[in-house]
Image (tube, rainbow, N blue to C red):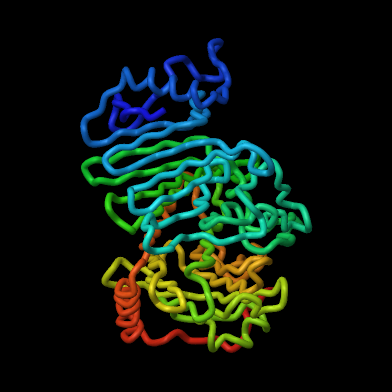
Amino acid sequence: PRLASPRLASPRSVDHCSRSTSPSSSSYRPPLALSRHQSMQRLARISAHLHDDGEEETITLTDTAKGIYLDAFQMDKGGFSVRKHRLKGGLQDNVDVVEVSNGIIKATVLPTRGMTIHRVELLDPAVELSLGWESPVKGPVHPSYVNLEDNKGLGWLYSFNGWMVRCGVEFSGHPGEDSDGRLLSLHGKIAHIPSSVVNVKFDEKHQTLYLRGKVDEVWFKGANFELWTELALHKGSKTFGLTDRLTNHSAKTQEFTMLYHANYGRPILGEGARILGTFSTVQAFDDEALKDIENWQRYQGPGYVKPGGERLYCVVPFGDKADNDKCKLVFHDPAASKGIAISYDVKSLPYLSVWKNEDTVKNGYVTGIEPGTSFPPNRRVERKAGRLATIEPNETRVFEMRYTMLSKPGEVSAAARDIQKLVRVHGPAKLLKEPLPKD
């Protein structure tokens, strides 16, 4: 069934639940998973009592504190569309999926996996362009099937696929013991924590659709992080934005890391694909990467490294002073006919990891272009190197990124020229002669 747009009571929020949802209330009932038919009926009943001010509408898909959960939802409004469903069977069983589109691009988001963006596709039948890759791990994996500490802290790899996987928040990077002996698993926990709030906002004034989710990484007597994620699609545009707001709700200063593990395979990745950007310094992660540092911006074909091999480069970018210190990147295919343009604030994300996994297609042919608050070594190493960020009690940090899908050679060349102008003023990147220290 397809519903007309709900009419909302407030431009900022929707309370879909009229009963008390306080755990202390005698009328409290835990949220129940509804069938698709029940969800549609429930939303239809709710929408009959809602109104809006003509500029903003918000639809709540999940709010655990209020006992709200819709397992299925769909809506078309003003050129935008929203679809929500729940996967069944195998390791993907009970993974929630939300698809949002502006008619030009479509993004697939996984609230069950910390608002991971599984895939972004250009909806142009004449151009094959998508963000993501073909992993040996098929389909979204439910967090209940993943033990992050398995395989000496490499459990994260048992669910690794998709385009944008957030890493953090208390820690990320390579597994190993911290200075106090605590085992820190690969890339942290945030991508395996289900969202407690998910909503969609239509901003008619600015012709923008927002998909927002709240993910809490909390443990008793330890970290207490609240992460609000926001994906923005603009009407008629191939550009979309990500805005994350991280708040420390604990009573003490906390160390933290945020790394945006954005993964690209075909059709952009291939022999001769290139990454361009506003780079200050480039350092190989290890001796193997150092051997090819002169060609670090150019990609080789599948099978270039031995099975299981990889190369990693640790980059310090510079920002465009005329554009609020935004780092500018372009990753394009071998023919320079399509790709992705990326910009973000280097003050909030001062480090960039470029992971080149030029393994066989069967093993996973992929590259990660990963802005972050630190480099990939274990937190113990990053702390010693002075790269580990901290956040004060009740402080909120904001991370903003902008992505533009480039589907024509002229778009790729124009984005590349903008970067070349900045590099001519700043100077080329300095290639460091020693691998990144890791002790």
